[in-house]
Image (tube, rainbow, N blue to C red):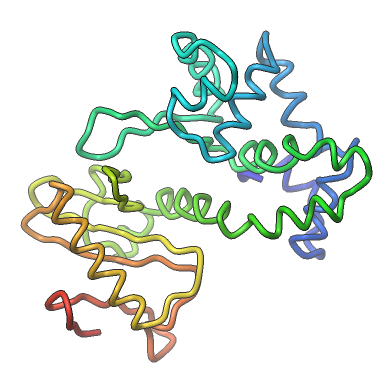
Length: 259
């Protein structure tokens, strides 16, 4: 729901996730129509904005891809994006270490969910085929939540630093992407860098070690390493602990390490 109180109030806290999604999927419900109604009030060409958001929510992140899928002239895309940025729905993302290429992302979780699922499946929902639509969402949901979880972790970086869970002062925070990708990089330039892999899944100890070796390899390619480098995994649940006290694991080499 993107943290919007008016939207959260429409959910049933005693019901599970899928019961609440089922309620959102009912044509005529407040959350079924709110995204489209809000945009109709704010913009002159709502259908163009709907197409842009559907493309972004579907996984397109390059301006040229979004313009092509939305059927608009790429030279005019910035005019539409400017308003979506002002509404805090979309933002432009520049990978750390590069001025270009610019990537695009839907930052509001309610709009991201709506245009990935509700908008794209309106034909099913308006025929009353809610269970069929829910089945499609269940299949895709882990992939969708991966990006949502990454954004949540990025938002938590200042709190992680204050809680001493993050060793690097967050003067720069972003993703690195050039052929390969590092989910999140936190930098205090010239002093310290923390490379973070974000996983919407469980991670066991052996997998954690493999992930950190890969992070080290990609970090060496990124040009973002510093005098003091750290490697971190943030996962939904993990087995890299022997007690209730969270701990971090740091490899002393590419193939061995200590907890």
